[in-house]
Image (cartoon, rainbow, N blue to C red; front, side, top):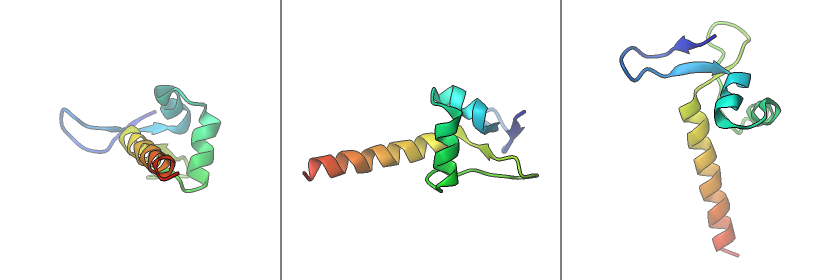
Length: 75
């Protein structure tokens, strides 16, 4: 089940953790672990079921990758 968060042609949808993991090509347990550690954002808009936005997950992954690359460059 998905929920639209904004109207219009480019509306982004909330995805369940397993659905988002399939889109990203990673195990759901990996995504869930990162969310539980507050490394990635999630939303629980109407219940205890957590939803994520792919754009937020991808942005966080890019930010962490940039930090990791910067750390390697300083070695």
